[in-house]
Image 1 (cartoon, helix red, strand yellow):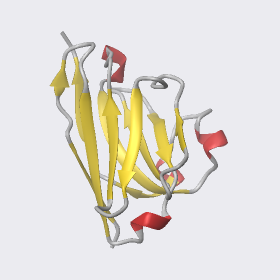
Image 2: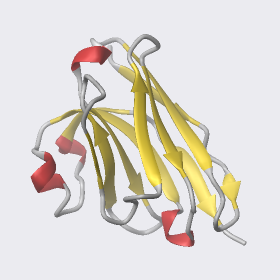
Image 3: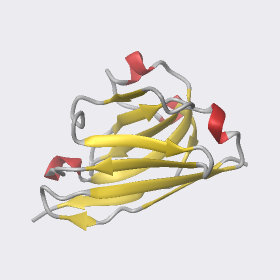
Image 4: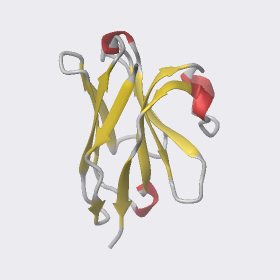
Length: 130
């Protein structure tokens, strides 16, 4: 059974930094592209970033470009999201997701729905507030 477990969420002040981590098990991690998505309070799910299975290609939502970095360690079945210059609008529940079923070109233009990914974590909360 595929499992994704996120960690690293916390409360930080605007301008701060955080690293989110996600450990995967139960599937061939090194053959799957991995994504981070997030859900702000009262809003839909927003795709944030993706990294391909070989870790040589990444894409980001415009809202986090130049501030967030996605990376992975296939030897450890881990994917990371390094977040800098955090803003209040970055507040939300952050999910690690895999087995993306729609192209990146589609998912960046609309809200994410659960069926867009086959595997989901339980989420880790990030709160940016002064």
